[in-house]
Amino acid sequence: MKKNKGFCICPLASGSKGNSVFVSSPETSVLIDAGLSGIEIQRRLTQVGQTPEQLSAIIITHEHSDHVRGAGILSRRFNIPVYITPQTFNACNNLGKVELLNFFECGTAFSIDQLQVVPFSISHDAQDPAGLTLSFGESKIGIATDLGHATGLVKEHLKNCHLLYIESNHDPEMLINGSYPWFLKQRVKSRTGHLSNMDTRQLLTEILDQDLNSDLNPTLQHVILAHLSEENNCPKKAAIEVAKGLNGSDIALYVAGPDQPGEMIRL
Image (cartoon, one colour):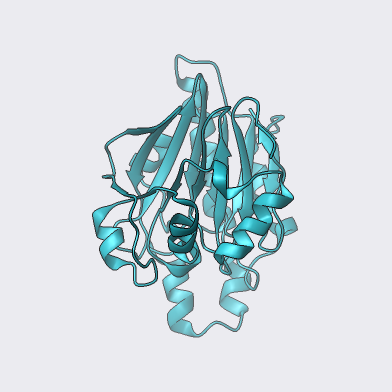
């Protein structure tokens, strides 16, 4: 097991097949969602030099199976506390019995050892979906996937982050011309569905404008695009479109994928 120096983030999986993100400070490691099987999450943690035994918590953002699938088994097998809102917990049908359960509410900050966590409400077709910011020292990570519309609240929480892990789900033309049934296309496009590449580009433009107009120095250094649709998007198309919103800055842009862990990024 590698002991991480500083504040780190690594996507373990991103997409409709399953979602999970590893975040750590020197003494605290957490998973944001656990949407693969328990054994697959173990395998991917091993790939990036980590182990489930070191995890301080699993934080669940909402109840959809591609975010929850392995959470219960990992919690039971390794005695890992699960942090979840009461509404999300009541909506989960595949979590199973969890002994180490901690409820949080969107809008109320909490701590997990060294990490400061601020959950905020997002717009998605789930019971109580949450975006998150996680802070350690002076560094701040913003996580917002599975949202159909970036509200003012979302923008407020995501400003002044050093790294954003943010949804860039679909290309509108690929979605409309693709094989999804009409009702599913409408769901994806809705204000409780998923952000398009263009939506994400616009969101980043607004966040950067907010940062430039604040009293603080611009902080954003890294952007990870997440939850790309394998059928209605492609990494190159997403990166090209979203890069237009970075205004020629030197912000590093990454694309998280479904099949392998991404890069371990240290702030």
